[in-house]
Image (cartoon, rainbow, N blue to C red):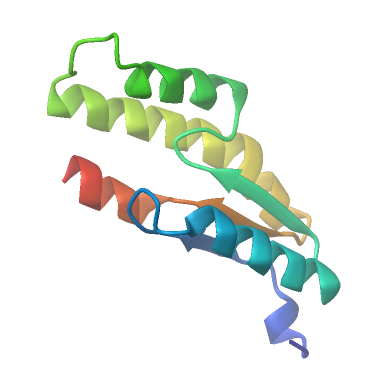
Length: 112
């Protein structure tokens, strides 16, 4: 990549079902961008911050009863709000690219 427009910070999300290879694609994309001179922040959803990771643990804990769909959706939004404020926006503000293992598209798929 070259040119001023292509060097602007971006948020890229890698989406797909379990076992689709998102983590593999994320690693390869990160390596390619870093090799081309970009600062890259790799992250994931739900998660990416200490609070969002705690919400992730709660959502994925098999010992908990299933949450109401609305509860799950609101927890996902809470985790995302924290993630965006602590990780995504600061990284973009300093010119980094953010590559996320899932983001909003997964909410449409999983929480409807």
